[in-house]
Length: 153
Image 1 (cartoon, rainbow, N blue to C red):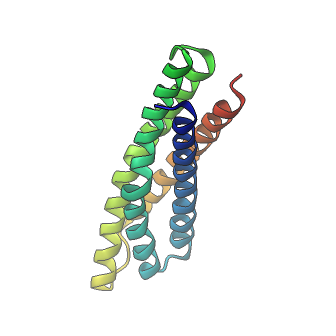
Image 2 (tube, rainbow, N blue to C red):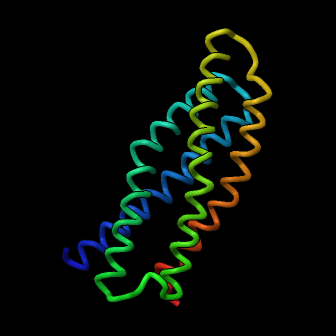
């Protein structure tokens, strides 16, 4: 595959991954702070959809195109910045996978609370705290990966 085309796809998927991640996190975080169940359900429902439509494909495309670019340039995956990009990528992924599961559960809890006109259960708010912690760990890792991609130290 042409190097520049591969690089373009890699950059575009990084943009989609970062943009969808920060946008989804912002709207879900803000909805949870308002504690309006209808707003929370709207946000969680759409965050789950965004994860399937944008984040998941971008995560896959990032790995495939990143490895392909390294191969095209003759860089071993153990090369300093490539190696650390992969470590941080998998670290962010390890944070993201439970977040996806929690978001689905949070969406479902919000739907039940909205339909039954009841408060969100304590479990929802425990998930919210874990969701924030995992996001706070993953976000700087993603920023670092982008920095490594650009700087190639």
